[in-house]
Image 1: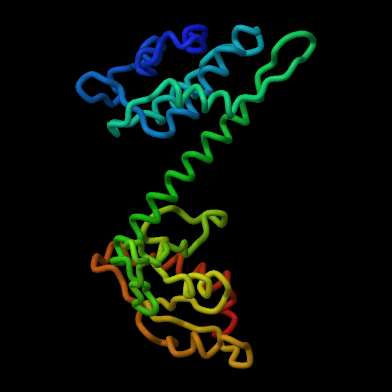
Image 2 (image 1 turned 180 degrees about the horizontal axis):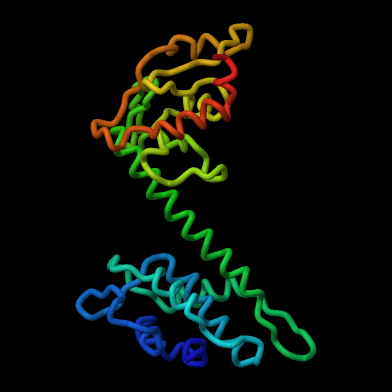
Amino acid sequence: MYSKYTQGKQSDPATVFAELEIKDKSALPTSDGIVQFNTDFSSAFTMLITKQRRQQLGVDSGIDDDFHTIIRDAITPTGIEGNLNSEKQSEQGSTQQHQNDGGMEAQSESDFERSYTEAKRAQRDSQFQEDVKEAYNQTCAVCSSDRMTPDGRPEVEAAHIRPVSEGGKDIITNGIALCRLHHWAFDNDWISIDDDYTVTVKDVPEVSGYEDFAQYQGSRLNLPESDEHRPNKDVIEFHRRHHGFEDDR
């Protein structure tokens, strides 16, 4: 299979994928009998080719059940068909080989797993941005700004209330739509949210910039129409504590 891939004899990744011995292949999503791929397919397919090569070198036992899961997760009925040329370029760009004891040794598998994880993270963040901004109607929750560029792109950004790096999730209830100024203020200790969904401002009137935010003290946030999309009270409490607002109470 690998030799066919490298020689370009199979231009349809679906044909290559069909040769894999994956348990319960009927469970995979299809459209009119054609397996279709999302953008994560490139990373997963690269990992597959690397495993095949390592197996040929006698340094890998082959494709295990965990890897089957990665392949399955990389395929969704998105209507985007895989393209051999883009997959081959991805493999060439992400796979670095070097000489070792007279033979070719594949790059560490962990590098490809990291690449796959990063691709998944980017996809989740993009969806998070879209969902939050839509829930807030492209409007800043603090100042109600709905500024747009001349070509119609909104200024508003989706901010995580509890950062992903601190255990937060890419879900609407852990997000809030803010203009760029108030996104900066939210991330840099100037403003936070009380349990009643009102704005609380750090009480440091001697610091330059205080007057820009003090006007919003106690004002109610512009919230999504749906109650289920409003910020979770636990992540709000985390934000206040993390940014030192609980110390002022």
